[in-house]
Length: 225
Image (cartoon, helix red, strand yellow):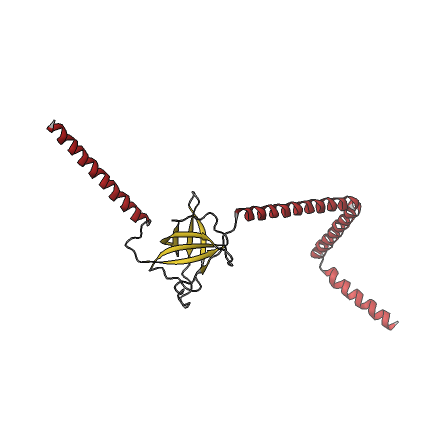
């Protein structure tokens, strides 16, 4: 019996070591993913939105594209100019300024929402402690759908107008086909005559000289007689 009790003790020790190692590995992964900020110096900022597009607590927060914190609290405001307050915990290294911007973006194919912060201009003063940052609301999906529908309607109207223009132009061409053909024939005839005259002058350039003299003599005769 004593031997069996010692066997159970070894099993319990192995199980305890396995659980301890698993917990350490989990904590290490959380640190690597930035989920835990126990030993980091952080500060909190409130960001005001009217629409957050499904943003959740613990969502990551990026500063100039680099992860610096997470969303710690989301609450609905009453009797305020903005509807929702989003509290984020940021690294002390992420310094926000008065003209910093806050956006809600989508990460990857899974559609995870996160907050993106811009540093602001270098000459702008830092954001005072306790002062909220006014966020830029994302465009709601129904608004995108509505705009797409409006564009499709306008495209359909434009297509219908173009088709009507083509029909009217075709009718006009049909009605004036005879006149158009006559104009084309006249142009072809004039072009042919011009070509023949040009070729004749190339072969007999003296005609142009004598023609000019004949015209001069005719003018002199006209004036003297």
